Structure formats: structure tokens, C-alpha cells
Length: 279
Image (cartoon, rainbow, N blue to C red; front, top):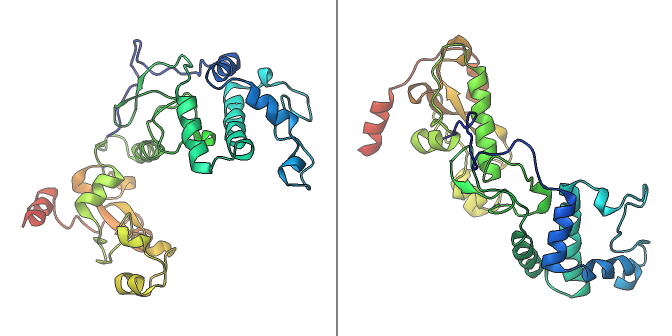
């Protein structure tokens, strides 16, 4: 369920702008990791690491084209660059494996104090620190002013926002009607044609074309979009249909496109569906 925090105030309210500066980032990296490792990378040529065709050093203290020093970079760009170089140092210079290097770098950089307060996820309302608690830890996916605790919740919140904006004025909107929740209640079969749709079944992890795959999915191909599950609004939103439990079902992509903005009628209300699922 998406949480409305548009009017939130107080110390735990999410800031609208990233307050972290490049100077703070560099100071924290020097405090946690030191700086000698980066100077070693700046003095080491790729040829010395057995790659004769790479005519460059392992790292630079400034951009090669504009000679822009690290201190003049944006905080997030400096952070991304130094995390990548820290991993490079551990793997190329110290000979650590990639998993070991990533684990060490995660612990080092999560120990940094960037002055970011604890805030609430706008989707699930859990408390988080913007620099910590990421499912996908790669620094390229970090942003210090994020409003959600994970990429999944950010995607779901954006989907709900798009649905709400597409409703006609006065149409009902229930933020608890998420894609995951609709799938759990109405999946996996398309309510129009009865086809078993794809969403997150474990059987999708089978090797495509293998015997277990054929026994489970027949002649289906893994990337055939026609079997993808979508949340279908039985009474179209363009005709005043709301985003509520009585007006949503799971449909396959083909039926969703063929149905268009026609109203095929609600097969049964939500109480009937719950009663059948309990039988």
C-alpha cells in the first residue's frame, strides 16, 4: 500500500533535496578506507596488470578531458566512481574474489556517516536510511534522496500513481490493490479466456525447452508476451471504472488488448471469489 506523505513534517520527513556534499563523501571515505589505496591505483598502469592493450592507469584523481578534480564532482558521481575503484583495488591489487570484494565494500560504505536521517518508505512505511538497506547494492542504482526502500516498491508506487491519474474524476481508488495483491487473489488464470498467465511462478526458472519446461508449459516460449499477467479493470477506467477489488481481475496480455475499453461485465464480486477460494 502506498503511503501519502505529501504533508509530512518533522525530523523524519523525507527531504526534497540531497544534502550530501562531495566534501563529506571524500572525508568519510578517507576515514573508513584511507586514501593510500586510491593513490596506488593512480600510480598503477593497466599494462602492469597483464592488459597491454589498455593504455591508461587504473584510476585518475581528475577527469582526463577537463582535468576536473574529484572535489568538483557531484556527490553521487564521486561516490559511484570511488566504490567502483575500491572494488577494483581489492580484486586487481589484493587478489580478492568479486564476492569477497563486494561484501567488504558494502560493509565499508555502509559504515559511512553521510548525515542522512532515517526516513519512511513512501510505499510500505518502513523506516530506512537512504544509503543503506538496498536489495540491489550496486552503486550505480543508489540515489541518496530516494523515497522507497527498494526498486520493487518504487516500481509498484509508480504503477499505482499512473493508475490513479488515469481514472475519471470521482472514480474510486484503493491503494491496497497492487499488482502483487491482485495476483495473489485472482491469479494465475485469465478471467476472460481461462489461460494460465505468467507472473512470478517458480516454474519460470526452468530451462526453456527442457523436458521439465515442456511438461509444465508445453510449447510456450519464455519471452512470449501474450501470456504475461496484467491487472485488468473490468469496467474500463475510461468509462468511470474504479481501481477497487470489485473491478479488477487478472487477464492475459492478449485478452487485455482485445478487450480494449469494452465492458465485459464482472464475473463475480469479491465476496464470491473469497468464498470459492476457501472451499
